[in-house]
Length: 399
Image (tube, rainbow, N blue to C red; front, top):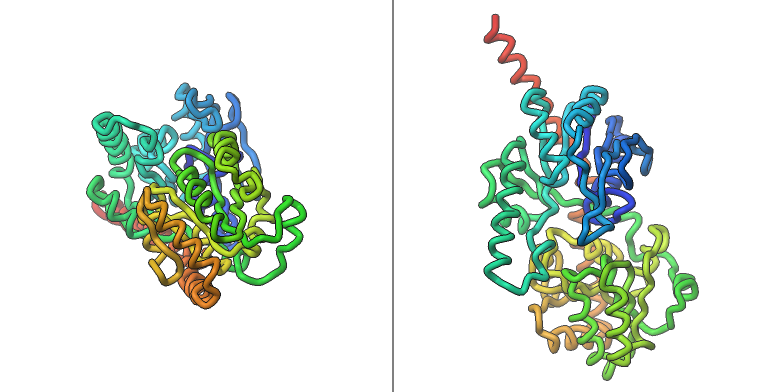
């Protein structure tokens, strides 16, 4: 089967959408399928590249003014370029990863091609409106964003999203059927075995127990809330807070950590290559996340598969992963004291910690990437079969 992915963000912009495609596409290829991707380029030129062993057709694009790391495709001649790719690749199924410019062009082109199209939603309006102070303006923008979302995803056969929380969020905006399919993680890559002490030397980490955050350091991740709690918790618990990743807030958070007198307790590693990342989980005692706009949170799953208890905000899909007082603790936004108490319990109560380790490992089994690939194969086969039946019916009626 030939499967064409369409995504408005892709390598070198490393986010959840890219990681979703780059992990399942090679596994689909290993099972005999042909896979290709349409994504924005890094410049104004069209090209065909090999990324992660996958053919990627990159469309001419320009940087977003307010966030230059992201790019948007240039509309000029866009549909003709995409139509030629579809004609040459001859996909059996097209799999959209968003509802933006490229995906909108694909569904428009497909009105005359009638190729089965499905969509996976990784989108929450809060990813964009989190900094809006005016509630009325925020509501207006969110309604507009949902309307654009509905316009595209109501034209596909099926919509998937990583969790039931995400499915409940988007069902009111769609007529199309919505089902949850986890984005999945490699349980072999992220597990509780192996030695990670060499990573301490490489990144200048102390031998203190580690509270870990991994991910983008952007406003919606609310890392400043964690920093404030860490400043209180270190007065009674001896640990380091390690922040792995890059983002627009990194410099300001580094300044804030100094102002809080945490320069000896907080380490910002910057970008970490994939081969090093599992080792950070292995040397850590606990993972923490305060982002309210998570449809799944791959980093939380990675932490669980590595046997880490998780302290998480009680928002988005995080309560589906973290069960309070079972494999971690949940807190409400602004509950600094709850975060502090959670850190104290996990870092000082060995029996509690060990029990949470076992439950995190257990819960992570439901998100094995192998299960995810099999689930999408069933979806693709169903779409392909439906297309064949529809064609045969149309042929019979023409006789």
